[in-house]
Length: 330
Ligand code: PBG
Image (cartoon, rainbow, N blue to C red; front, side, top):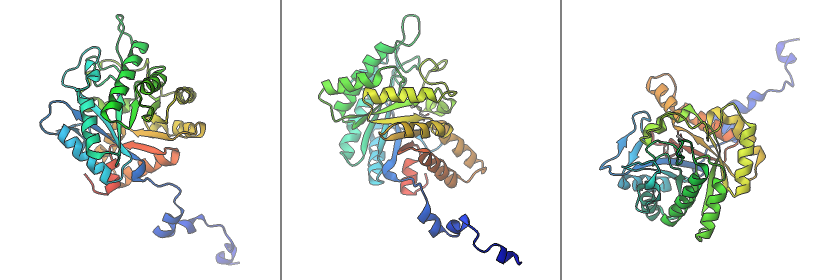
């Protein structure tokens, strides 16, 4: 018997990989601009955009340049942009966060005026960009996080963001009860249509390293008393269930690449849209390897985002969002 006869009728999965057309036909996952969100930094008092050295290609924007990038996001068909504000002056209670004319509220207003409803304007509801100690909340006299006082501030921040024009607010501080308090405050302020993208499962991760430079953070120590332990996944399901019960409209898992199991578990557990944040360290590792010629940059970006999608993300926040959507490398 020849080997050819021996193989008659053999099942061959490779038939669905023989050329690009058949591979495209059977691809189970694709990354689409409409599901991508671009995180953007806006700094107070800048006269021109300032590069972030640990995130090649990412900058702190001026109010002018952020309008421009927002309109590019709209043109590229992105889901939206997520705004982070960096005030010139930080203090212990993060007062800048509650100033209607503060940098983040001003940026939200400017961007919303620019894009209208063409792309979604989203805002970070957290204090770490505004506090001089760099924590995500205010501290007690003893120097530990004051959860409930922080949540009250988040609720006021969320209302200010909504009034400035945010379509969605994104509480990222991992304080207990933050989603419930924000939902109540928005509803009381006649902002029932403003949704909450809740950072439900957010880990205390070393992969936020470059972000600390991006927001000129002065954090000493870590966030382990409020962000989650990377060892845990059941805890994420508990956190996520609480956020859903408290009124989250979308739920986020963060970081993304090291937490694809968490993402898949969360996707299976809830029936609201799930977002994943492809964080700064994930970005910078690929950029650094590519800059050294150790990795194919474009292919690595595509594989990273596809993997996040495959694991269960409906929506992805990524610093590559605009590049991926337009196909124009930075
Ligand atoms: C907190 C916040 C952080 C990130 C997004 N929101 C930093 C942190 O929790 O320490 C990190 C994002 C990234 O690393 O890309 N406001």
